Image (cartoon, rainbow, N blue to C red; front, side):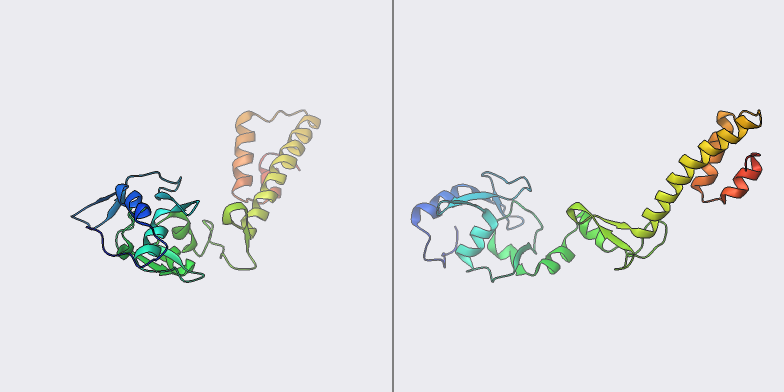
Amino acid sequence: MFPSIVNADVTPRDRQRFEKKVQIDLETGCWVWIGALSRAGYGQFSWQGKVRIAPRVAYTWWRGEIPAGLHLDHCVCKYPRCVNPWHLEAVTQRVNNERSACVGTLNAQVTHCPRGHPYDDANTEYHDGGRRRCVTCRRLDNRIRSVLYNGIRAAKRQAAQEGRVLTEEDMADIREALKREVDRRLVAELYGVA
């Protein structure tokens, strides 16, 4: 049923334990792992005293060592539970990411932020987990927050000094205008506050 193993370190007992955790899908050719799974959905197998990722074990046993610096890509089926070593290819992390359809890969292909600023070295900040943010937008958002906070307070103070009351509707309009980057002086003139 399974082909010959090329790795000399595999005992008959190891092979038997591994094969018990695999069901072959005759339609796709996938060797579907039915044993324990990692959080990412990959099979896990204990071998030589360590819990290992089952596709890596299968590749090592049937095809040989994974070259240093390379990662396994499910190039045929894209199914994490598949441990068929002929559905796996040793590739660089970059190639693996480019072939992936995950959100991170799709986001990496986006070259501009939603407001149209470029994601380049000078205009991009990276946060935990590789999440990126447009520097221009961050600065703009900080400025808008500051204007909203300070502008609204100033508008209320001035209106009170002049004996006028800004309604909630006025306040909502001011906030909306400031969010749209309308000049503060224009907003002040519209609502009679300097």
